[in-house]
Length: 123
Image (cartoon, rainbow, N blue to C red; front, side, top):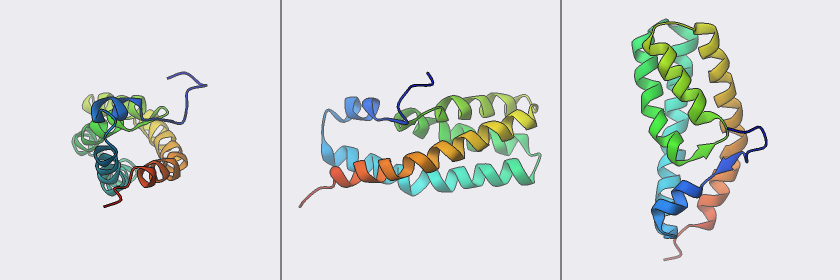
């Protein structure tokens, strides 16, 4: 992703939703409800264990969400963690990528919550 890329890119979500605000709201709600927990699990596994298989499994699980809700660099960093953990190597790089993911996710979360609010069903 380019350095001047936006922090949050929801174009793919808008494409697959065909402009349906209810669909956008539901997908963003699922993301907000599940991604932080998954990221927290990934952080715990990376910082407290050398269980590369569990790290790989958790990173792989987060990758699909990161492909729909595109936060700057997060998909690429998760993909790199996924690749490195599969080869049971690169712990320092994995930690560096994790730190990037956490930083960008925390910056983007208020934007994601605001977008969800804009798409909240009125009925």
